[in-house]
Image 1: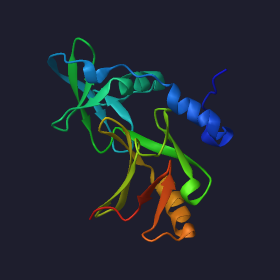
Image 2: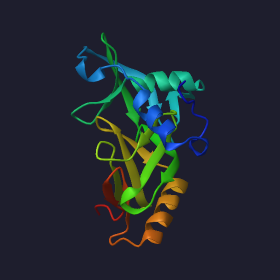
Image 3: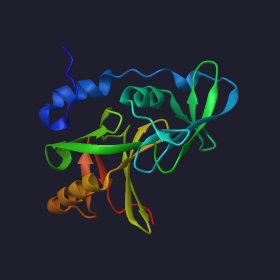
Image 4: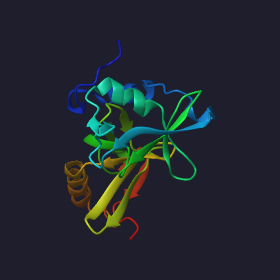
Length: 187
């Protein structure tokens, strides 16, 4: 029986890995439909999805749209089906990492993140963490897939920073999935 996601603290890492591997997404990278305009969708900096100015209140609808979201080579975000492609406005990143679960320490650590869409990812070589500097302070991101990032929510970033400082690596950073992610990102 597959685990269900209520929050990461109630799951073992085996269950988390099963969730992370279990979601099958449509093959949006292989679809090349004509561009049909704008979808009327905007994804706010806090991860809230809006359609024509109103928040999309149904989580299942957000998950559906998120599953067909793609980033184009020119940086635009689009919703893609086999027959149409529609632009989406994204203020920062299309996803937000809202929870983290850490297991192990040092090189043996694994960091699992739950996104605002309910997706679960483990930071590793395929899903790297990066830390950018901005006038507002560090901007931490997790690569979700094919150029689509999740902004790591500020409380989650503080949790990661506390763990990194406690481990004392120089430069400060964390291991996950066998990869070291330095927290002193590009200026």
